[in-house]
Length: 381
Ligand code: ACO
Image 1: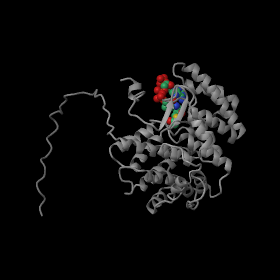
Image 2: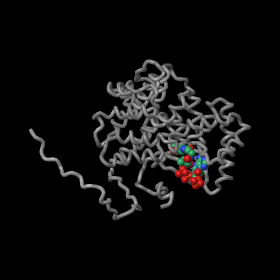
Image 3: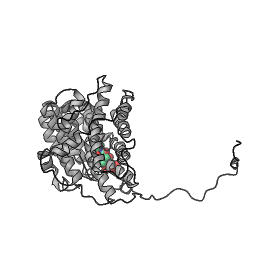
Image 4: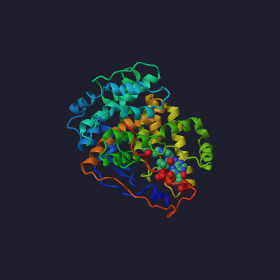
């Protein structure tokens, strides 16, 4: 079986009305609204409202929806205790996975509903901020009912009122990655929900899928790459040497997009506003060289900049440590995961694909294996 089929490439596994990924046109829309329009007009609460309820809210910010989220930010004691019990050396993505799991101690029965989704969205940032402060030896900051979802997250991380430019950049990032069709993590979530399992189990599976560098783990590696390149004049020889050694350039290529990822273009604009000018110039030069060299080395593959390239720069400028990038992506994606969980269960069908068996058949164990002993008799009272 060829690689395309093994990766389910171009296989349509269902219908969805949540987001449209235009892989050849370079467009992305949520519920029919172009992502550029969304990021220009809607805060994250409104974007979550749009994804989950199918319509933009009547007002921006959506007061009732935002309040429903804010009321759910505080962690139940068992989830806080689970986070606090982790070694401080735990990778934050693993800490978030454990924290999410600890949210699901009975209150997330199947089928999922909007209230469960709001709990997931509201509490994921609280879990992550609590773990990050704890590993830095800082007291946890309890959530308050004030500020937007993203402002509250930044305040719980830093203990300070967030800088408006940083909050704007992070909120734009949240909007841009809130959903993305049938990506690997969403697929994992939908498979779990299709067995009539619960939202938290689905979100935990999704988080596991998002962790890998082929999906959500790339932006920190983008920054490692920028560090390794060091200066704009070294970009060309560095990229050539990397490609000659068959190293994948992080932040380039995408399963769905055979043109530039529209989120990359928007994040480039955001990075230009918030990143240090010399950092942005280095990234820009590296991108130009990488695109040229990928075109030359792999003309058949149509490899372009993906969302993760400038995401790294934006998250760095927001002031987040690199190992928080993947779980922050997950925190933003909880809105999309919720929308997909509700969609999956509204018309559920067990997702259970098949596999072509290509192994040996009709084999027998050699006679040197004795028969297992018969089942023991009933135990004496
Ligand atoms: N750098 C160099 N070569 C690449 C890259 C890259 N970034 N991406 C793909 N290629 C090459 C592969 O080596 C492969 O070559 P081969 O046929 O000689 O083996 C060919 O292009 C096709 O690549 P596939 O891995 O088959 O393409 P696929 O659709 O499976 O991969 C993926 C998509 C995983 C994103 C890939 O492009 C990649 O690894 N990129 C780097 C990691 C990255 O940026 N991940 C974030 C993705 S965005 C997101 O999920 C949110």
